[in-house]
Image 1 (cartoon, rainbow, N blue to C red):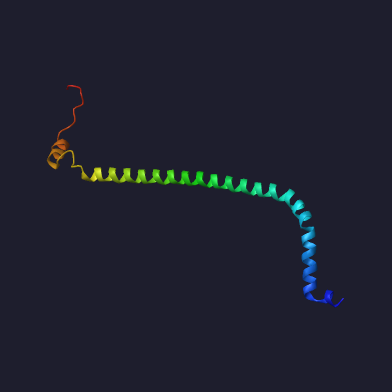
Image 2: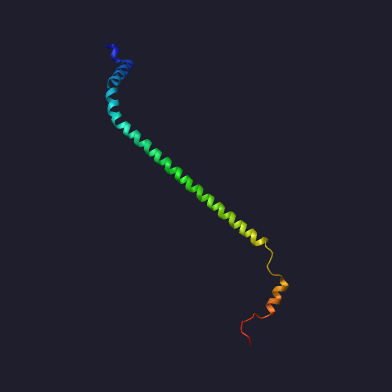
Length: 105
């Protein structure tokens, strides 16, 4: 009986008990574990697809913003680079002459 009182003996008995009950535990957990694992993988795949979709939409948004910014820069450059359509002398002459009304007096 001295053999069953030691810590080693207790460890061996626990190990033997686990070995004998392991098939029962695996069968019980296996019936629940496989569907749970499949559901976890499915949720992971759906989250990945949603993440990729969101990343693509974000990429399109950034591209649109860059295109709009470039268009604004180009239009501002075009507005500052174009020479005035009329000179100062022409504008003073145009201011002194009355516009034609289209009716003869």
